[in-house]
Image 1: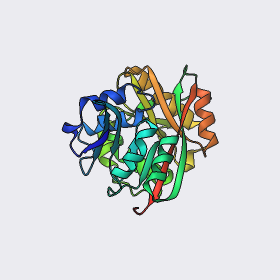
Image 2: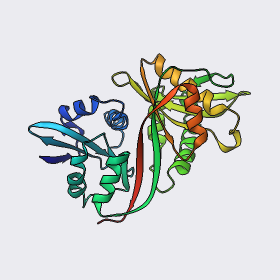
Image 3: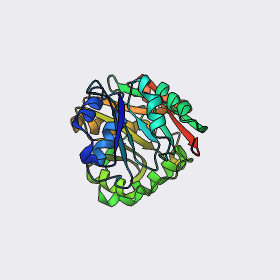
Length: 273
């Protein structure tokens, strides 16, 4: 029983990706990140790992600096050995299902400096938003605006992480048709994104409304628009994450028809053990 690692996507075994695909709901983030890596994003310093036992892959993880280590829904009995294997590998923290993330943070021997509690939701049946409005797909003319809003979103949502310039990812995702904008009076007031479907699964996010346009129902409308766009792209399994510290967003998504699935944690760790 051993963890193996590679910095090359070509060396990541098909069996490891197949393990992630067995549960596209709880492994939604690793699957979508893996897909974007295949499009040339996160070329600098990625790490991919997989755990084998009895000749079979039983777990997989990804790390795309400067983001935290990214866990799939890996078996708890593989977490401690992963933390020990990565003691000399720099990472800002860990992101994954709550029990696994907490177990990794504890086994790392490092001090926790902050955490974000999140909840994964799955769409049951899409309901109309509380106000009218039509979202449109962003195009190349919107890249600068979307990148500016993306920087603002990251600074607000994850201020403890030193993010890379999001412009390359934004340009790629806009080119893929993954961002939608809501306009009111001819000006953009909110944005939301979705991931192109992977085996029918798409995840909504990020969703961002600039502070000056909040408390007007725009977030619900643009999330509804992104959900519809994902469905039109072929998704029949719609997911999204919420920050549990934000009761407003949680209530909005429930009202649109999203139902809780599982809790996740993003834990920031100081230094090295």
